Length: 343
Image (cartoon, rainbow, N blue to C red):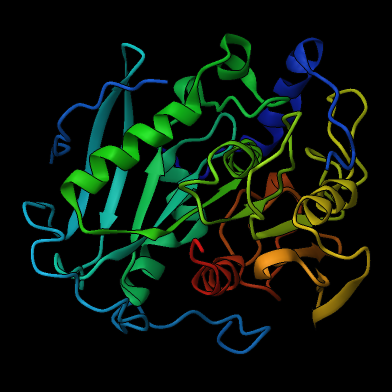
């Protein structure tokens, strides 16, 4: 299988078929799952730092060991495996990477990594290099598979949106299964994703803030209305200003808000001030942070000048446009996550 297929171009074409189903999103808009037994598959360091730690280096020792019995009965072990849960009578699939340093008596951070439309979990793992980062920092990486290569993220995308799939219930089901298998720190569960997966990460922040501590979408926006989480949710967003698939200035045709409006919406929800202060300028990358957010919930926008529909510092098809090499999104978002456990 070619994991580096030209998904960005395919997404641009396929989005046109979704236009009739979109709902308008305000620019600054202030179920039961059946869990199956998992089955094994067959055979900020310094702000602006861009080089990730070596794969064998364990950077994050994690929280103290759990109280005796707190993680008793967890049988999960290090390694890679495909697992399945049933949600609404439909079998759903996700891939789990547990680092060699995993300690069943020490609650581990967990990061969900959602692929883009017409992509898959293997491509997303490759493009983001998240598994190598999990080995370096000692967290569990989870790469879910969307039905028909899509996620229902409101205005985006494809069959999952058209059917109104309950992908939020899928996330709850994965968490229930993973927490039964592994010693997971419930305060350190995070979500990132690319494109359609980034839209879906935003949806999780809107609708699942009781479980998702913070999000870091790449090339995606808020696509649901209303979005009214009951607590401030830290958000770090990466977006190229030359993105032709999810335009930086928004798209009336697809119901996409401008990137700046989507981020102002998060600032408003989190009680931040209107002013944004530059926190990083390095090469083509510029990150700004909104001031005075409630409960320390940072809202940061990283804009990549000339950047396309790609993962900064990652490995994404050139058909998506230029990929920034001045900012390693994976390292930067993990630093962000480590600062923002659930309160």
